[in-house]
Every structure is written in structure tokens, then in C-alpha cells.
Amino acid sequence: MSPAVESPKKLYLEDLHVGQRFTSGVYRMDEDRIKAFAAEFDPQPFHLDETAAQNTVFRGLSASGWHTAAAVMKLLVTGGLPLANGVIGAGGEIAWPNPTRPGDTLRVESEIIEITPSRSKPNQAMVKVRSVTFNQREEQVYVFTAKVLVFKRPAA
Amino acid sequence: MSPAVESPKKLYLEDLHVGQRFTSGVYRMDEDRIKAFAAEFDPQPFHLDETAAQNTVFRGLSASGWHTAAAVMKLLVTGGLPLANGVIGAGGEIAWPNPTRPGDTLRVESEIIEITPSRSKPNQAMVKVRSVTFNQREEQVYVFTAKVLVFKRPAA
Image (cartoon, each protein chain N blue to C red):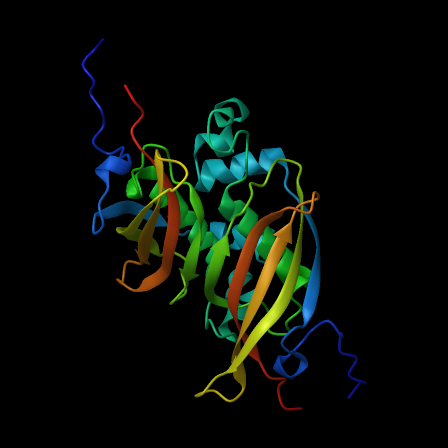
């Protein structure tokens, strides 16, 4: 029985409250990775080729919205949303208010906006988290309001 | 002036109506790619390691929801939603009702549920498309209700 030195960053349901805020680290969107992700999952001209992208609504190369979403998940999982049982999303609402460009550096600000205890499972709750992703110009590029499954601390 | 042989699959706003349906091709979720995607974007035990995944709510290895979302985008872009100007999503609602497992084969059924002409831009509209993704057991694994930007056919 060594002393339980628990990381303060790993939160259970009892540790959460509405209004609580978290800030992630940063993630740089590299041009090569933007194009490779698009080639695999979202092969459209505005995500693949700078010249072709000029004549589209994006007016220049932009990352697939799903690449941005995935990068944000990386930020949430690696400290941006420090839940002890991990970030388990059931779904939510998403929006991409502005394009993500090559070289952009993303940062996520999250806030707990609702906590709904499960009726059938007393050890868990659905927690609504609004995560706003900013680029280095403080423009919002992605807003994800997620329903996240959170558990109570296990009995000792 | 060669005869205009236009692909019937590339649709403009005039070609769309509420209730219109589309079916995508199929996409196989390979175990290696599931793990690699998770390692890059969603490094959590239930997406990375079969044994560790057994003791989680997923009860076995499952794909990152963002990997499923990205694979579905590939299906939409490559025929599942045959829009002439591409699939340009402003946002929407997402849900993952069931996990995606290694080896699963995904298929997307889409339906146009609302068409809202732009007030300021007469050549475009926001079209709401509900896309339900099924695995080979006909289970719903992902539901995406997207707001998609659609343009009128350009003047000749």
C-alpha cells in the first residue's frame, strides 16, 4: 500500500462542476499532413492543392474539417479535458466557423455546461462540454459541444 | 461546342429536393489503420490495444469516432453525396450509437431533409442532409446531420 499519489489532472464525476474550464496545449497543422489527411479521407480540391483551392469558397488551401476535429481530439485527450476514464463522446454538435490553414496553431478552451446523472447507472453521468478551438489569430475555427460519458471515482 | 455529356451524378441546387436519397459505396475499417489513426489523434486504450479495451465500456477494440467520421466523409465525397461543388459542410450534429470494430464495412445512406435558400446570396442554399452509417450487421454506427453549402448550376 504505497501512498496514493493521484495526478490532480485526472478528474472523476465528483470533481466536475458546471462552469469549470480547461485549456489545452497547442497543435500545429502542417501543410503536408493536411494534404495527406485529405487524400485519404476528404479528397476535394480545396484540401489538396493550393492553386485549385484559390477558386473555391475557401480562397486557399484549408484543412478538412475532420482533420481539424481529429487534431482537437488529440488536444482534448492529451490534457485538454483531463477525465480519469478518458474522453468518451456519445455525440454532439459541431461547427467550423472559419477554415484551418497550413501552419495554423490550434488551442482548445473547454467549459462544462451541463451535468446529467444517469437514471439507470448511479456511477455515471452525461456531461455536456463546449470546446471552442482558436487559431493563433484568436479566430474560432471549430466549436464542438460534446456529450461525454463520465464516471464516478471507483470505490477504494 | 461538343455535346454536353454531363454526369448525372454531379448535382446542383436545382437538382435537389427534400426526401431525395443517396447510397454510398463501402469502406472497410482495417485494424492496423484503426490503431494508427488512434495513435495520431485519439490515443486512448480502447482504440489502441485489444486487451486493454476489454476492460472499458467498449468491451473490445473500437475505432476512434473521428476515424469513423473521416471514413464516412470519404464515402460521401466519392459518390455518397454527389454534389457538383463538393461536400462543403458548415457543421451539424453527430452521434455514434454503436462502436466501429476492426474489419467492419461501413455504408452510408443519406437523405435531404431541408433546403434553405440563402437570403443574401441568390445562387446558394444551406441543405440539411441526414447521413446514417451502417456496418455489415445493419447496426447504426454513426449519424451525421450536416448543414451543407450547395450552389446553383453556373450560367452557361
